[in-house]
Image (cartoon, rainbow, N blue to C red):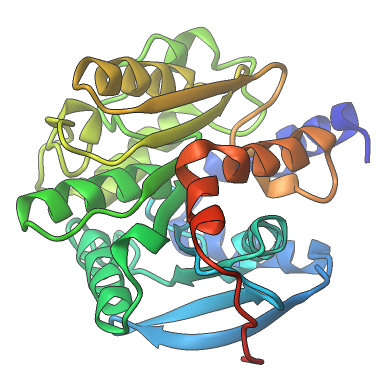
Amino acid sequence: MKKAHLKTLIRCTIKPLFHPWVPFKLRRLLMHSSRLLHRKVAHVNRSTVRLGGCSSYCVAHQHASHLTLLYLHGGGYVFGGVYTHKPLVDNLAATGKCKVVMPNYRLAPEYPFPAALHDALACYKALLEQGTPAEHIVVAGDSAGGGLALALALQLKANAIPQPRALVLLSPWVDLTLSGASITERRQRDPMLLPSGLASCARAYCQTTELNNPLCSPLFADLTDLPPLIIQVGTEEILFSDAQALHRKALAANVKSSLSEFSGMWHDFQLHAGQLDESNQALNDIFANEAVASISSSVKPIKTPEL
C-alpha cells in the first residue's frame, strides 16, 4: 500500500475512534478488527506466558541473541495489546533477531494510575528474577507505552534496581498536560490523534492524580542517571513537541539521547513495518543504535528453543 493511501485510510477510519465521545470499551471492540490485517512474520516463535503476574505475548526469533525487549504497548493507557501491536512486536523480533515480551498491563479507566506502572515494574523484576541480566534488557514502548517505559526507568532508579541497557521510545507521550506547541500547531496535519482524545485518555488514566505527576508525565521528572534514550517521532504528529522536549531535557541531564525525526510520517508509523519502507528503516535504526547493537555484539548468539 502506498504511503499516501495508508495515511488517508488512517485519517478516515482510525482518527474518528480517538474522539472523546467514543466510549473506551467500544474503542477496544472496534480496534480488535485490526487483527484481520495482521501479516505472518517468518522465522519467529510465538507463545503466551505469565510474567510478573501479567499475561504476556512473547515472540522470539528462531536464532535469537541474548537481547530481550520488554515492550510496553501504546493506546492512551485505555486500549491496546496483541490485537493492535502483534505485527510490530513480531517485526521487532525478526528485525533484531531477539526475544520480545509484551505484557497486557491493566488499562484505565477501570485500573487508573499507577496500575500500569506497577504491572510494568513487576514484569521487569520478573525478567531479572528469571536470570535475564539488566544489561541484556531493552525497555521499549510507543505512545503511552513510551511514557510508561520512561516512568518505569524512573521507578527503577527510585528503588535502586538495575537499569536496562537502553530505552526505545517511539512517538512517546510524556506530557499528559498537553503543553507542547505541536498539540495545537499540528492538529490538522496529524492523521491519527486528536488533542481532545488525548485529554480524555489522560483524565481516564490519572483520575485523582495530577496530570503533571512525574510518573504520569515523565517529561517533568529528574532524568539524571537514566539509561540511553532512543527516540523516534514523525514530523506530522501532535506529539512532535514531546519527543523534542524529552530529547533536550535528557541531554541537559547528561543522559545519552538520540532523536530521529521521520519526515512526512505520522504517529506510531512503526506499526506499519512490513508495509512501508520508512517503518522498516525505523526498526532497523533501533537495532543499529550503539546502545542496542552492543548487546548482540558482546555475546554469542544462542539458539532459542521452540516456545
